[in-house]
Image (cartoon, rainbow, N blue to C red):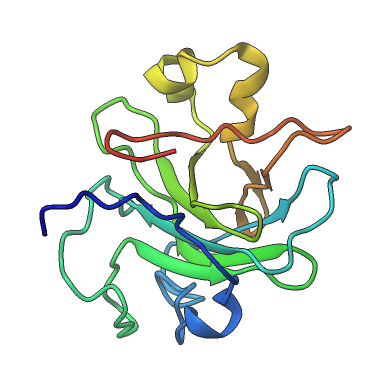
Length: 189
C-alpha cells in the first residue's frame, strides 16, 4: 500500500476490558503463598478523586534477583514459572491486586521498580508509569532525579503488611497530584 494511513486512537469505542481481556490467574505472577510472594495493590482514581471501576493494568518486572524474564508463555500460568508479566482489572472500588515477588534492581546499585501500563475509559491511549520499590537506591535513580521533588513520591510504592501499595491518580485532584506518566521512544501521544 503506497498511501500513508492516519493513526487511529488506541481505543475507539469501549472499553471492553471486563470481559475481553482478563484471563485466568492473570494477576498472579506467582501463586499466592509461594516463597517470596508479595501483593502489589492500589486504587486507580480519576481527576475528581473517584475510583475508576473499569481500568485494566498490565505490569512487567524483573524477578527477585533483578533478572528480566525472556521466556515465552506469559499467558500460561503453570504455578512455578515466573514470567514477569501480569494483567489485572480494577473492581467497583477502583482496587487492583497482583501476586508477585519484590523485584530486584536490574543494574548493580540501581533502584528496583515495576513497570505499569494503565488502560481506562477516557484514555485514548494507554499510559505508562513505574512503581519504585522503597530503598536507599532511589536517591541516585536518574528518572526520579530528573523530576521536581514534589512529583517523585507519585512513583514510589509504599510497603504494608502484605507487600507493596501503589495508587494511580490519572489526573490531579484536590487532594492528590497526578501520577507521573512516562513516554518511551516511539510511543505516540
